[in-house]
Image 1: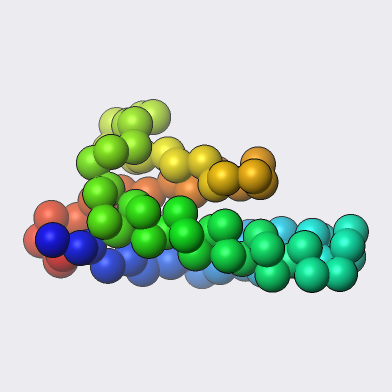
Image 2: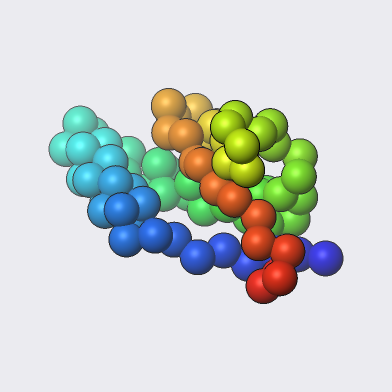
Length: 79
């Protein structure tokens, strides 16, 4: 079973800020960053229990190639 995800407003803003920062560093790097985040979100949705619990019910997944940590919870009621 594949899970879905919902981004909080704060996460969306943080992602947008990081995208802009990477794009300012090098043209096209923001798109590579976005692909890395999208890929990690797909991996999380496919197997959300794979990633470690860092605090109480919060899991952490680090993106590949970028120091961007995705913190999430699993809502079993709304898969």
